[in-house]
Image (cartoon, rainbow, N blue to C red; front, side):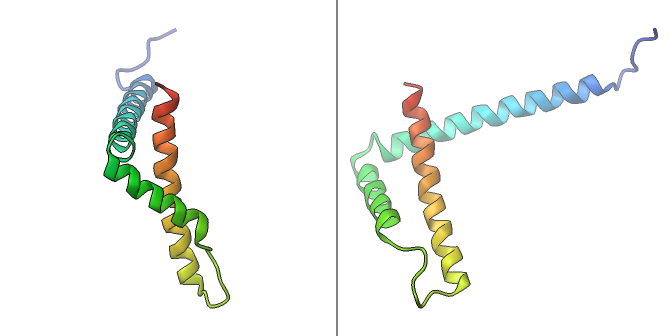
Length: 94
């Protein structure tokens, strides 16, 4: 059996895995930064608590909502949920 040529699929797979590792490392760093800002800092924690309350207390839809307004409201809620999820991922690794 002949060896694979130099530009084999293995090189592309390896490059993809390296990129995935770099992406994961960057995500972990971002999560740690979010934790530092929104948990370890009193003002950040206060802001996150206000956003969390807003997430829980503000309906995505009401009788006067347009599709655009509903989409924007849900986008804001998704942003807050993603922050909370990122922070929780750091806390679960402590």
